[in-house]
Image (cartoon, rainbow, N blue to C red):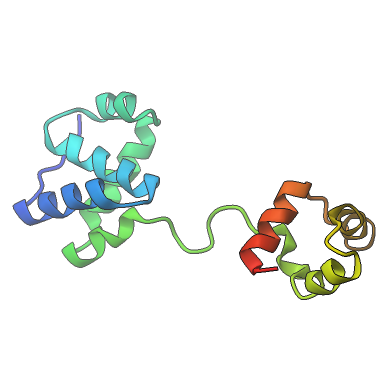
Length: 134
């Protein structure tokens, strides 16, 4: 049974981050640490949050080893994690294709699949073009 004891400042920072963070992963990690501080065991925290107890163990170990300045930064995911954009490699080609095919996305999807071996759905292409401002 492993539990954390937080300082008043850490507890206040975690509660504030839990309430205001737009990132669900950060909110979940804050909740785990706050629940552990209230006296809950790792297995109970894992059941409440819906993750494996080993995940809680790693989070608590990481929290203990860092100094107070780096603790809150450790709650965020590392840079470069997550899904990579499939269309990033052809981003410079897409404006020309959109103009050439008069905003008809079906031929663009065929070109991407045949010439560049990129298989994406129409919605993904629409979202990418929308984010790119095309």
